[in-house]
Length: 176
Image 1 (cartoon, helix red, strand yellow):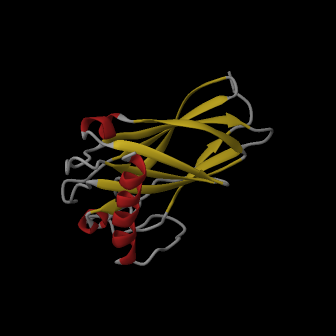
Image 2 (cartoon, rainbow, N blue to C red):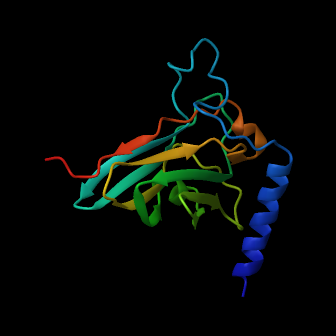
């Protein structure tokens, strides 16, 4: 089977990129805003958007927005934490599809590791939805948040100036 070799190749590539940068966990935005802008004014590079929900199921879009001065990534490794929700699944977003990439999601307790890659192309991922995540509501309010674990992208230059959007609060009940 080719899949285990492919997964191993991607894991080795990620380890190489991660080995060249310190991993960090930060509260708030990561990176430096573009010249002349404050962090409050700068557009977020990665953000979460709460989409329509049907009963207990909630969908959250993970969106990538590249500023003109940023290098475009060829590969992404993103971490999303969640609390008070049950993870149901994920679908590739339009930005991933346009680049001919694949989305792989690995679930760990309370967090998701999302990897966007392709073994057969070096196309860059442009701005747009990266993934649509589905969750089931719990008995209390929940939350979904991007985790600041650098590097997010390969090549390394694409990580310059990355800013993360705020966490999402997911109410326990649907409000009419």
